[in-house]
Amino acid sequence: MILTTTLSAAAAAAIINLWLMIRCAQIRVSAKVAHGDGGNVLLGRRMRAHSNFIENAPLVLILIGAIELTGKGGTWLALVAAVYLLARVAHPFGMDRDGANVLRAGGTMVTMLTLIGLATMAVLISLGKF
Image 1 (cartoon, rainbow, N blue to C red):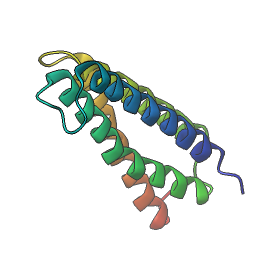
Image 2 (spheres, one colour):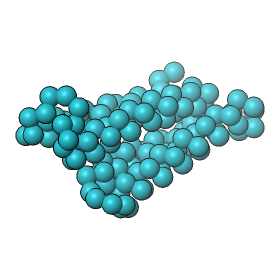
Image 3 (cartoon, one colour):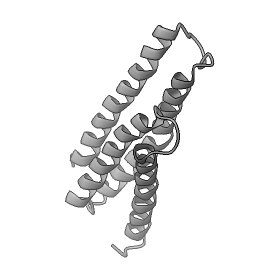
Image 4 (cartoon, rainbow, N blue to C red):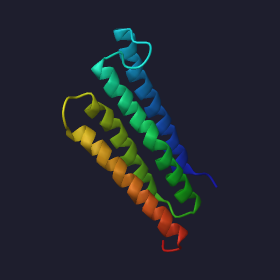
């Protein structure tokens, strides 16, 4: 069984992770900061955006893979993965800005809803309810 949705989502997540690393590296080089954030506010924000992605993406990918393995995935699962990944691209742009904004809040909300939704589906599938 080829896990098409999981493979595609994992590949996209790897690219997003690389992009987030590059965004941090650009500030590190320009600000000459080797370790930590060096007191650079923008670098601190970009580091947190990267950390936030790393904190959440593995759980989402595991749930996507587990659901797909059960054969209960399909188009809905691919759409959830795509919306999640788009939100994870929006979130760092929001983190670059001062104050609350729709990009940061939207990325956070979609991440939370994705985790809750996929976890719920996983439990329902394991109980034979879906």
